[in-house]
Image 1 (cartoon, one colour):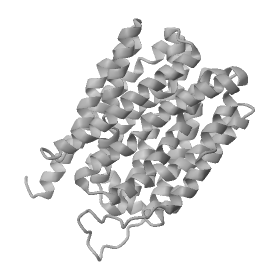
Image 2: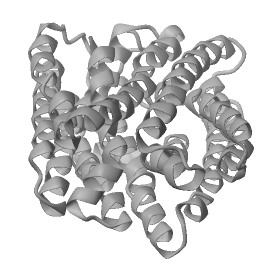
Image 3: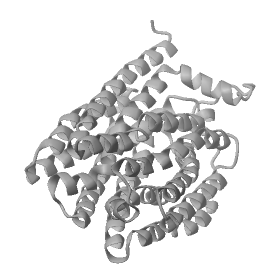
Image 4: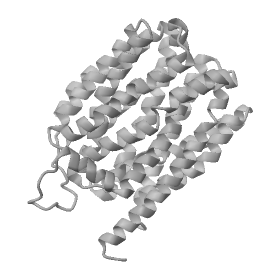
Length: 401
């Protein structure tokens, strides 16, 4: 159920990317304005995440998720009524309120349903919904917009969420930390400031979320502008570009996410830092593939390179979230996920779509895309550094100098 809802989460998020050209033409929006539509959602998403993170560590998590699904579904459908940039921006921003509840709480619930030794695979299944949902957003947006206009695409994407909001209420909220070492029974509950203060002092955790920011900068820019890049830089028709890019995302995302989660769990038998090492190494290997994908003009070369890049990038989807929940205590997992969402979006896909749009307005989209592989390298290096810091923390806990 949580994975299925996550699929709609990302479908509603990325249906916008398939509609950039038609809604931009009808509403007369510049690339800079179009680039701000995704951050409009993400800014609200990251600002509300700490609020829902705190609520998720203290209240009924399934009810909070149901509320979030209801809000984002209504907001997605409302975007179909937009009359200009401001109304469209506000509708997309409200999507962020609902998704903040889901993004912070759902992984914390999953961590309490399953033991640590299989969490990599569990999160891989859960996060396989990212590429599938994103691809459905591209495909549904492109197909419905071509047949019935971009407004109908928002209606079709948003309204099914009203049913999901009711279904999620049937899920049980499991005991927090039931598969983790028990915390001291007399440990007082931390205040919000103490909770987030302790997370900021957790070196391995903070490096992990900063690396996540660089990774999200690259992936967010590629996800939002990818279909438009194919139209402008490679001459692919608009409807075909959305379908082509969506097809690549769904296949590589599913395979890469599943393989990454499975491999990380296998490597845990060798090192407790397996999740971070896998993320760091696979991301560094993806960087040259991204470069070739955005610079090669031969269709066979750039498509093969894009497939390889997406496979390697999506391999981190499950392991990085497994690493985050393993780096903190069970009582603050929702808060830790909330802070990671705040940091990764503040550093990542809040600035990347508008920045790429601004550079595109000044030169070209092809030139703007050259910053993406640089961000990929930065993310990979920081994640490898985080793995080293996690090892140091484990040795310190074991009393080894």
